[in-house]
Image (cartoon, rainbow, N blue to C red; front, side, top):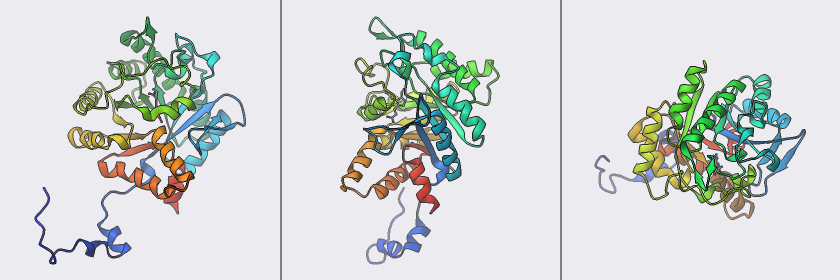
Length: 332
Ligand code: PBG
């Protein structure tokens, strides 16, 4: 409830806006480097920094360069990075076998980063899409994305990721029952300290386009993801998904995309009171970067304002491709 205001001129809102110091003094939300998770794309090779056309300023990095990036992130005070693989077509098949390989890109990168930069958290996505010749997050059988058979695969994938040293697993597949299966598997294999950040309120969105380029999944994807990701029209459903993931053993939850779904961020935090994160996804990044590159908006200010919005909505943190730039700015 908003408390009753004295009528003008007894109340003048502009008194508290008159100087920088007083604006700072009464300010509500704040953005800190502790709130940031930096998603990084990894690829094969050595010494490679390969630009991603649809995400200006973001690169695919070979493992050695990813280690360098992790070092830079740690120096900036970024608490956690999230690794995503660019999988070459030859390593994709309908059984997604590369997902369970202890030596796949993200697992190798995790071990290399853990050895070189022990003080940064590593998050890995649990989902089959980077490894699937069909581009879907689950197995495709006769045109259907099958739920329960996919769960067994996600469990295997989660265990090799935990084995490689991942601190946080982020199931992003939207299969029913995945959090419970993964949490029980982690407990049964002595990985009780591995945290789960569930992509709980993950919507079927047009804003993932550049990411699918970045991981090489765009060409592969047949159809869309509407039979497993949430319909953009639904708010209560996102709350139910999130509540269920918590009940199944998620430690943290995520809303994705971010900015078009700030209402969901606010509801999740206000109604469920759990550690809540937003993913400012590739399409959101691309919009700000493209408008900035054209001189249509002040990119730096838009970037900071967009991230602050998540904090104001109640999020505890944000996954953002802007993380290193923001961290450097906040350090100034
Ligand atoms: C895959 C996954 C996606 C993203 C993160 N994990 C894409 C998708 O569901 O198609 C999107 C991230 C982004 O757009 O930045 N399960």
